[in-house]
Each structure stands twice: as C-alpha cells, then as structure tokens.
Length: 482
Image 1 (tube, helix red, strand yellow):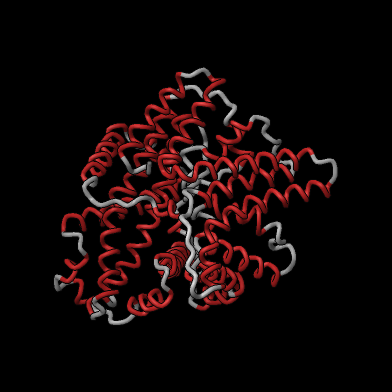
Image 2 (cartoon, one colour):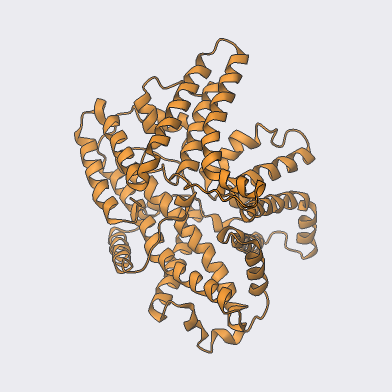
C-alpha cells in the first residue's frame, strides 16, 4: 500500500477518524492494528519477521536496562545487536556474499519491505537502553507500535526511541491547526512525487536507456548533463516527497516525526549536504557509529578514518553492490578533502579577492557541491560499475550547445507541455527551498505567512497538478527498495 496509491488514500482517513473517536487508552492498539495492516498490504510474507525482530529487541532492551553489572549490560547489548543485525544481513547481503564466495551457485532472497529502516530504528532502542537515555517499555504492544508505526516503517524517518516512544502514551486531541499543517505537508509531498518525480522519471529513463542501447552522439554531452541534473531533483523529490507525506500523516494525528530533508541542494559543502540530506539516517550514523568510533576526538587521522568507515557502511547499508560502496566512499573522500584543503580554499578566496563577497562565495560553493553530488548519484542510480563510468564519460564529452536549439530536446520523451510543467515545478521547488532557507522555517510555516487568498490559490494549483499527473506512470518510492 504505497503512499501514492488509491488504497492508502482510502485507508488513511479511516485510520485518523477512528483514532480520534476511540478512547485514549485503546488508541495505541488501533494504531498498531493499522500499522500491521499497512505493512501486510506491502509485504504480507515479512510480517512474521517484523514480529520476531520486535520481540528480540524488546526483550534485549529490558535485559540491558535491568542488568546488575556492566559486563552483563554489554553482553545483552551485543547479543541484541547481533541477533537483530543478523536478520538484516541474511536477507540483504547473503545473496551477494554467496555470489562472491562461489561461482556456480546462485542464491537470492527477496528483501523484506522496510527491513533496513525498522532494524535501525529498533537498534536505537537497545543502545538507548544501554546508555540509560530511555527506559524500557513494559508494554510490548506499545513497543511494537514504535517499531511498526505506519507513516515511517517503509522508508523512514528513522525515529529514536527517546523521541517517539513517549509520544505513543500522550493523549492527542484533534487540533485543526495541526491537521491543516499535516495535510499541507502531505500535499507538498504528493506534488514532489506526482508532478516532479513522475516527469523526471520519464526524462531520465529515456535518456539513459537511449545512451545504453543507442550509443551515438545524441546521447553525449548536453542531454546527459540534463539527465544527470534531472536525476538529482528526481531523487530529491522522491525521497523528500515520501518524508513530507510521512511527517504530515503523523502530524495530523498529533505525532512529531523527525525532519529528514532541509534544503539539501543549498548546501555549501558535502559535509553541509549530509547535515541536510536524509537527516534521520545521517544523524543515526553520527550518534551510533561515528561518535562511538571516536568522532573527531582522537586526532585528525583518526577523524578522517572514522568518516571513511561511516560512509563506507552507509553505502553498504543502501545495497550490496560495488556501486553503493563507491558511492559512499566518494562522499567520505569529498569530506576528508574538504577538511584537509580548508587552508588552500581560504588562500584561494584571498587570492581572488573574494573576502566580504559572501553571496558570491555561497553561490560558487553551492553550485560546486551540487555538481559533486549530482555526479556521485550516477553510482547510486545504476548497479553496473562499468556503465556508471561510461555514463560519466559521456556526460562530459561531445558537448554541443546547438543541441538545445535544433529540436533534439524532443528526444527527452516528455513532450513540450510536460517539459514546461516540470521545469516550472522544479523552479517552484527551488524557490520554496530558498525562501525556507532565508526565513529559517518549515514549508508549512512559509505557507502560514502568505495571504489567505494566495494560500488557497496554491492549494488548488497543487491539487490540480497532482490530479493531472495521475495518468503518468509513477513508480513506488525509491527508498522502499532498501
């Protein structure tokens, strides 16, 4: 039951309506039923696995918190982490490991829906219990709801036990203002997915398929550059679109879920990008891996090593292919070089007499960061390493500016009207991100600051564009594959 499906649009209002009608003490049971129903609709066969993971981590949290000695706490923590991670490793990486170790034997498993997300979310519970940052939840049904909460089980945000678990015991009253904010977040998420992503999906698929099977001069240079930047906005619209819908759905019911994207393409460095992109995952690696490894506390060389370890594991978390590993390592290298070359960058600013020209410097840094990120997405998009390298080569060779004016743009596969719509829609996304960045506010707060008549015009326009985009082939959200 993906968010961008009619069944979900029928399921969600019923879930919310009954949630507010049911007495407070029974609401978590209703939400647990809704969450398991939602998950079973996506992957019925994996529901038992979700239950097993829930029981393991719930039991481990209680054992860890109530252990009499430090040694026992460490043993229970290690046991809980190993058991839970073993499930993830088996289903996500066993096929890859078998293919590496053997030649003739083929072995593959269907990855259970959302396993990467709910595994990491449940791991926070064990670790937080070990750190005594949260108390163990005595009610296993409430804990099961924490693990399976339907807005975020499939693709995040990856919530922390100390944030979400207490909210499950709070009595949420129907709040029209909060409901309005949540519904607008959902509307904005559907705009990103249905209007922007659906069209950029057609464009990028068409260009890359042509470049793969019709390796002629048409698919080098300008069309590949357009496709590369288009994919950057496609993946942003897809990931952020899911997050906005998830956060909005939770907000309608009174739950505050983590912000997950904060104008990432306005970042001035790769490290700044990762403070803005998939925040719940990047902060998970920071809090539960980078800092325990020593962070930046043990010298420069150790700091750089820790960064490379974190981003290598981040790449592997996304998938068991060399491309994902390279993708992660590249982001690690960018950050290490960014820190190491800081004196040289400061000297270049002085050399070109750019001191005091903060806006110019910001534009340059933002553009360069966006270029680096866009090139790196090539390794994320395709699982074939040689194909990824060939596509990068094609992107920066055979550039003909005449391609923009000789009618070749029709080969992008969108048609004039859809091409105009997606250009305007991406421009709107960029403008909204710039305004949110400037005013330091969320997108729903930005809407609250606009005149009422303009606000309602925006609502109707977004809703109309979404309806007009329903006939386009829209795939499931990309992160549901992880």
